Length: 109
Image 1 (cartoon, rainbow, N blue to C red):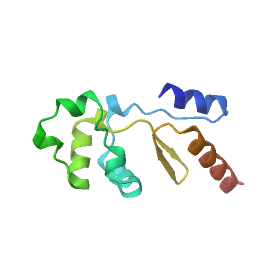
Image 2: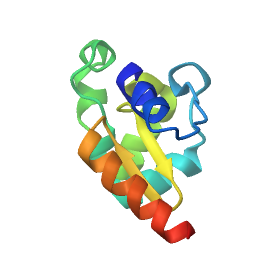
Image 3: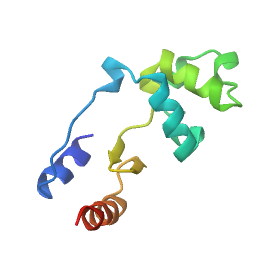
């Protein structure tokens, strides 16, 4: 998160930070994110929270199961999820951010 926020600051791009680990994410946002990105790209299966889940909980095979799990355990959502205009990115990738920021800027012109 620090890298992402620093990147936006360095590029003079205003941000709105939503701490979904603390505040959660509305289910409708998760559904939309999953529809765009696919639930496997959003579900953090490398973290401590995932490892603490029961095997039955980890046996996710559908989007609805993944959304329910991410609603119950917001720390299972990969960070950051970045929404710029109609673009959606997950994870910190400076190159993808640069391309997306340029695309959004051109669309606004």
